Length: 578
Image (cartoon, rainbow, N blue to C red):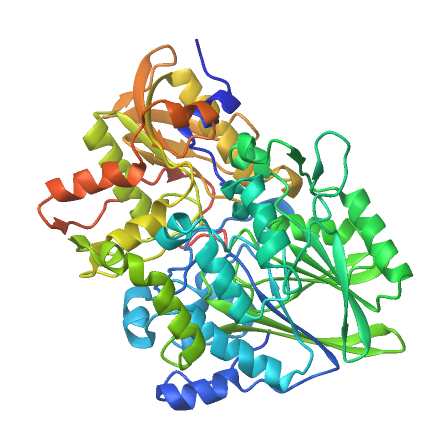
């Protein structure tokens, strides 16, 4: 019997979850560059700092930005669907600069060696302190996907990130992957660890039975005497993209009508500035900004788009600023407002890349990170192999990091085909670096990372690929869930993103032979969303991959991307060939 889309996700987990120029400082040394890069003049009287999607990365990392981020229809040629030089031109950034490296994948390996690692909470903490010192009263907003994405976050049940965020002086937070720790754990952190320190807000999470708010929908904080409302928008598709059983008592959704109600309510209570802290994904934020009036800015996350310039969206109430602050603690967004006569009259926005070589580590945060990691350091640092090629994940289609995962799943489990979810989290390794257990956990650490093998017909495989592709390329952002296309091993196919639903996937082949609709194929995958998977004795995916790495004898050759043949995207500014 063929599997439905939902059944497929349950057994296999292959679905997707899934400015201004900073000056010419590339040729300067690190000290001079840091002075120019982070010397941002104060503006106005209300400021917000924004981080999002750090995915539990406490230490500096490498992170390659996408070469494919295709926008179609009205989204073609517009942020966030620009890559490479197309993005740099809109941002007015010169190629070859540090900012160019932060925003794009151009000359990635050469630039990564030149400018070093990015992110790290100790370096981010230094930048946050600088910005708060220059902007008294500024609030630090955390857009979520904070308590998941690393070995230590998994092994401490998110406590490492909770402690680090409190020290970072996060003021307000919303969520997504946080909910995969389970309802009880999330409520425990919010009600105990965050009490009196951090406000967790989400206007779109309600109890499934009576529709009561689970968290505060918003908070009103005064900044230099100006009442400011921060409304939370958690990831609306959590019960679809992640296991439903983890949030069984809660309902989600976009909930535009309630968002408008919350905006109006906050304004009625005296809020002169209204900011939405969102985990919708940028395309969804852009649409919401056009439908809900009275929002001054949406500071978004989920889609990992590092946006160097703000987008202004018109609606019946005026205009709304939409921004997104990337991922992996790699960026800090700074939004300054000038508020006069009880309303916003002007603003400035900067997206600051966090270069570990240009920002000294904050001593207090560095000490906390060392303390957190101490019990796990030897385990994290264990070298499993060395990579001869760059390993990365981010991009609409296969990345070399996921190629390694599907290659391992097929080889170890004897499958003809393998799928890896279109997650956007996961760090990068450069050629010659060790594949450590830490990197492997960076790529796979969830609370449901079971490896699976199932039989599927060719017809079902096509149906699922079509559904996941529609999630990525549906012309209506409200039907998108923000992840990338499922990564595929062993199966070749063509994809026409511009085609209609059910007609994007064609010419599927395994070992050169056309996939037969009625034939069954052995398919490996990981991260099933069904509760039953916990009780079926499946290995964790990292254990399967470790077995494969050990069998390879220490060196992993560059992965050959099994990217589908793409049709009609050659001139798309969200597509960088090669």
